[in-house]
Image (cartoon, rainbow, N blue to C red; front, side, top):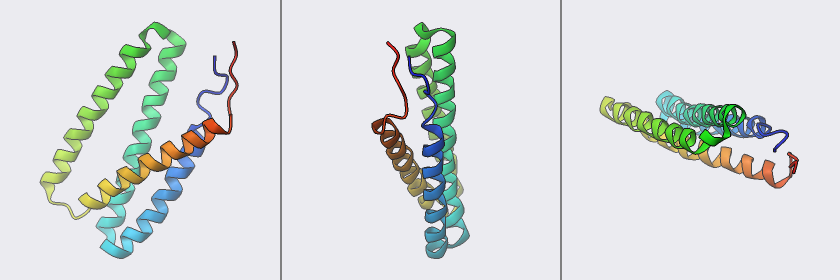
Length: 129
């Protein structure tokens, strides 16, 4: 059993937040407000998606660990269906922030994953046997 299973959320959120602010400044300079807002929206989408998934999986593990696989797959399927609908809608609007939003999603994924890997590597949790 992991004693601090949600401990990575804080450093991962901080990493995404820093990446979001820096990227929004750069894309704001390069592409104006649509660039800054698009980038921030992409990073925020990643953060919300990852936090919601983590909390759902954590809750399922506490309530009924036998449902982890089903819950994980269902959460993943629903998230990607919603993501594809959102991307399709944003693409159909012709908004100038589309490309910066895609870049924000990529940077958000890299920042979150990097922070979570770092947290895990540093052993910010203990395993109980």
